[in-house]
Image (cartoon, rainbow, N blue to C red; front, side, top):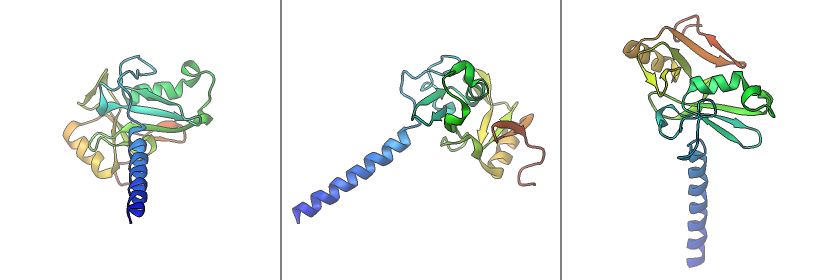
Length: 160
């Protein structure tokens, strides 16, 4: 019986360690700097963005604006790689503070919400979140990241 208990405890500990690692993977260390402006990223946890490469490298940013500057000028910042080696772009969602794929959120431009360096692309998940954000904080444009570009959303939330 004690052997089974130890085995189950070991499995539970290994599982918890793996879950924690996955959650922490997109959390910058205290000394991680934005790859575009050089600011310390961990200082602004509400705005952390990240790019993940196929070799496992993670590059952090102090907000989506710098992440997209990096993405659209990759040859300037990481000349040895191409966009084909990028496996994910992640942002911190405004309301939940979750790290989500940049393709899964709206980006609000021109709201009253400011990021670490002033005006920022504010990531908001879902039509309800977008409607709530716009009613509280305004915004001039709403963008989506899709097929490698930022495109303005022409219709309102929930419309085709």
